[in-house]
Image (cartoon, rainbow, N blue to C red; front, side):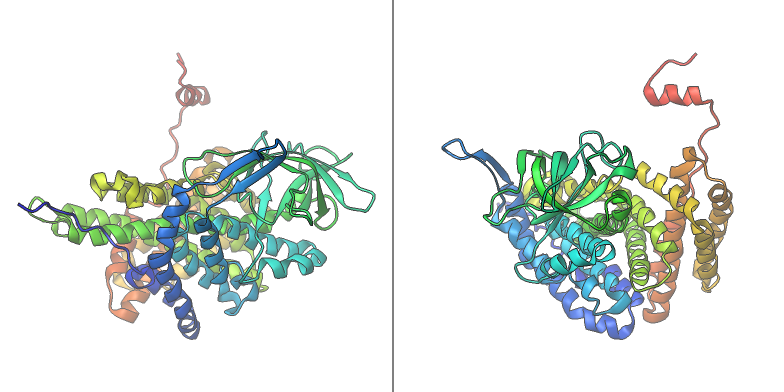
Length: 549
């Protein structure tokens, strides 16, 4: 008797094996630019499949180590990261993940090509894209707010070889998204530089070359208005820490290969970014770029797991037949695939608007899509990935398959750069600050009017109903309804994009699969039901586990 050995699932080069990603990029890019971008996308897919996944496994197996003192008691705060991690970062830099939108070889479509590359890179990177995210955002920020510093640092940050990376040091003990109580103090030196003193509680990519940090200049007012933004080079000319002491590295659920530290700033020399003040406002552009990457990271991981699950369904035999022949399993995968397509469509739509804004176009929808995209895709990806983990049975729970690593790392996207509730608040602020609600409604109505296939008639009907429900909420928003409004807007946009993509797929390729995805997604409901009409005290009792007579 021969022992049975289960053939493992293989994702392959996802630029070839993921039809939604390949076709969506072909749909959104002009034909000549898609042809121009194909070699880079093909190469990234191949690197991820053949080179990066083994490196990611090594990087997570040999996690960063902090050595506070040398053998003689001298404080050194050495952070050692594995060579595999460094190579993953370098691959992203060489392939232009940071440089591409700033070199802009595809004009306003450069963000779209970048999004496609991130989709292929992220699941195989062990979150090595974290320093790349912050570097991308730092470049945009410096160019907008301090051209002199940009001239000095951007060439180092956009280099393809021996490039610098930038950190983003905002979070302190008092909170994450709410930075108003930042306690780090800044004191001016005789030479015009500044010295920073305080503690930063989460410093991701703690081995970066520089960081942007919030601090309060001596004598500045309290709250957000008194905060300024500073640039710190982490090392001095001799290679020693620049007034920085490492307390410890964080022990995290995921992103285990990423060195995240608590650090004390003890006279770290820094340069102000632009004029003093407005530190929080200056971060807005960087924050939107970081949210853009985080929103892509979720469905990127789902796309990889879905590719594995599809392959596994043809290899795994249960009850005498492959899983692919089981009707329940097929329908289950179809529902997950529809949600993946919805996330992918919203990612690429956001990339289009971000690119247009960066090239002089209107930014109303780009500013609104930044939180909507991240809110929806980060959270939807965790649900979809949990389902996909189940599709492998017990093997999906084994570390050496690499599947749990992908699942763990997905969760961080719901937290980085704003939790779901923070993002819902940001949507309300974006609606209040301009004509975002009107622009959203006009966009949906205009594009819905161009849908013409009978197969999308049901989706159009649901879109009309969603707008009828949403617009009164958008026009008179209340804080308690923030999540309902934000989720309704995100899912409505996703359903519209799925319908558009479905019609293009059919018209171009005679492919009806997109119609099924749009119908499945829209059929699950686009706007959540209103919250039960209960007294506030009753809801509080439910929320906090109290008895309410």
